[in-house]
Length: 564
Image 1: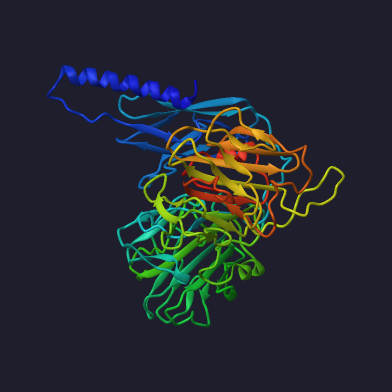
Image 2: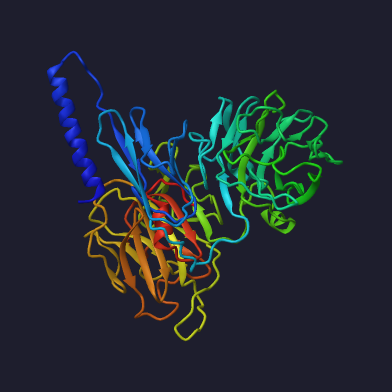
């Protein structure tokens, strides 16, 4: 019996018991409580410290209690997704387990299992190197201005937040004086002193802001490192137009004195330096060598306040994008980021494309990578998996063309290199408006010529005759689901639904650069050339330049969960 069925039976019993109580006391009328948990209910955790998030939806206050002290739970206020944070402390190499009980009123407890086998993690796959994006916020969704593209949602402090026009036809947020964002960046303490002592705070990081000044000759504050916004902020533009703070000096030059959009990047490696860039060019370098490790420019591991100051030196300002990295970017990396309104990410990285469809006025807009090109006219905004999470309805004959930017990869058994993209992963958050129809997710021919590659058939089975169809049917309901396709051709193409392996198609009978390999020019998404592409709702599409592993896909969770 699967977890969802078990939960359904428990909820039915709770409902019947509640009805019996109400029947015995007609004067007592109480809404039946509800509780739902979105995400994995069992984790196989490596021996290092790890952090996980679940989305808990409840009609009343819920509690989350861990059975072991090495497993911590924290309920995050004022967020609707990823609102239960689970922190697992590092393991010395022993086998151990923990259960987390999630409870609302009298409903049956939902249990989350944390298991460790005491072994070191598998390092066979390449680990990410260099600075990693830990948070990105693009403010495209006016009804959920703190929503994250990557990382944790921002927590809005105050009520002075308004959606406004951003650069290049996009969206932005105006943050009024006295209001600010709290960012749970998730970066662990780093850096070290001259004698090798480790830092207790985050001394090395990068933060990027796409900003516009509604007025000149005012104070603007970009960063307050105290998580409670106590004491003076750290990074200012003064009324004179000079930048930074008296502790490390002010710039000789003034920031651009206009009403245009600009990109400010702060790259810190304290106590060595904090560098400030505007529109890709070094603007000012503040020396922090006179300060100790863990000085005022170091972030608290708990989080940071963005666009915040405690005593009014934070005038109204427009922000179109914020990105945080876990290491300092160098001059070349910052230059590669470009100007305001362009992608807030380094050009290279496993996640090469992300589209969340939160901007109803620009449905092809990219959150990462290149914008999708809409083909056909039957494409319209629709509601997504949750409030503030947009989606698009794609009608028959219409589709998106994705310029993914992945270079040819893979190799044959004899070592010959691929001429196409044989190794990749594509994710779709999808909903089927109707069952017993054909749905096509991927067409690898960039001109949509010939049959598509990845289908759900009217019977509900998945994939294509070249590598076989699944024995089981996809979920036969009108709910949102997450489909992930991980290909390493000609070895395999694996298909996952809601984080779990659903079907593995063997491509070993096919040659390198077979029909499941992407063309380096791009791919057609939600496309088929002869009508086997019924109307479908899509809330997210993501593309990686490598095949993700079972564990990586399990960590992505179900539809609506944050994509990293």
